[in-house]
Image (cartoon, rainbow, N blue to C red):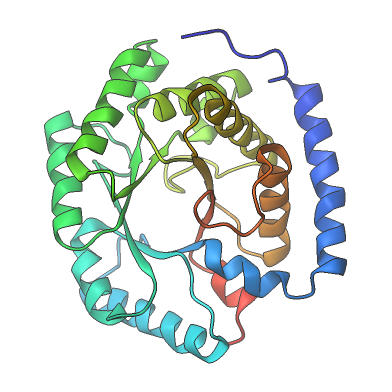
Length: 277
């Protein structure tokens, strides 16, 4: 793998975050409907050990009740693979994608064949999107080609029509250079998005990590011509925080702030800060 660019350093990242903070404040004052516009990039998420088919269906219907009144919908509902079908029944024909974590989530410490099967079963049951952890063990040991190859296997298994988001667990890697390299490994394998965090193994996303992931997405596009995105998760619960993260990413990539094709935020509660219940 090529060396990490020189601008992946604390000084440059801090400057990007400061600029984004100013941009975020301007958006709040100039775009009074920013909260409602955030809804369309949310992956509305429940990943609790206490989830049941019944509770997930209620979670989905509760979202629909609030969203229909406002005429707004999240990008997806994100659940464990066993609940994909329950979400599909609850959604009916509503314009919301079904996202499933899979591939041995949240640790990813299982056989590639098991990951492939679980992802395939989630898609067979109706998942439009898959969130899966990068093989961090391989990555940390420097076996980057192996980690990238596994992503490629999963992408081939689920197909081009399924959006594949690869989690790099920024709270584990911590170092900006490592985060950048992990994101590039995921993109090289065919990931459509890189995602910051599982929300299970360590701290969630930070503004610094968000900036690095966005830099990786921008650089990969320039290198490959393929349009890829970023997803931030783990602790983003207020519209104000969400707008900060979106401003950081889009200030780097040049994307529209509220484009679900390139920007996602995973949260269990953010939606209700953006839509009146």
